[in-house]
Length: 350
Image (cartoon, rainbow, N blue to C red; front, side, top):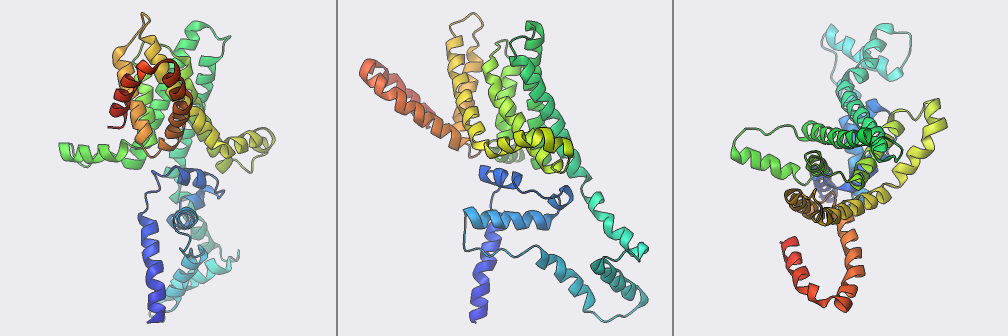
């Protein structure tokens, strides 16, 4: 009785850890990006499950007991070795497993298949990562050209729109690879799929980029979140896949380590630039290039960023800092603005 009571809570904790929504927790992305393991190991479900349990133990439930990865891998040969040999095929399978455990190079026929599965099990994941890295590296280079002051105006404007286009394609591709398409093309299925993806960071950035691609207004300040996002993706990919390269260690390791250790700083910078872009769009309403629809839709997007779990932490902190700075000044020098500000706040928190 005592042993069963000791196992049941851990079983429930493991079930809770498996059901936890890691995709919508920004801490999991930072935690997983700092785990340095080979690419073929990162594609194994048992390895991902192990590190998810360690993350859950660290941030959610410290009482969860995380078993080592080796316990699952060593239990399988033990199960295959327990049945008595009944035929020549079963004896050959047990000899193959024993050969894999010893890791001897004398049996070339059994050692070949043991090394073949890792390359066969990772090409899809590797291709997705490579595509994302290529697009984000291209976006970073093009965005730098767009904001560099010595670049000709025509080339700078074209690079400006290509930066948003590349980020939108990267975000939409990431949404498709993670969530797929709706199960059916009817209203309930579309609503369910939309409710799942609307709070994700990729969806928010895809709408963010589309709002500037379709606009004639050119705000170079809006490229700051694009640069931060591309830089973070490129640094994570390089550190995870090229950490043993001599060129990486000589020229890129210090920069990539700085980026990955300052993701919070990049998140704060992105949120502040996104809010600042919203105020620039309001100011642009006084210019001939004003776009009322874009300004209204962008502030709807800022409202979503304030509420979505992937971006809420940074945006709520930025808005709290703005409130602490501006509200005392408004109450002292412009108290007539309290009424419109309260109306805007009711709309914002609705």
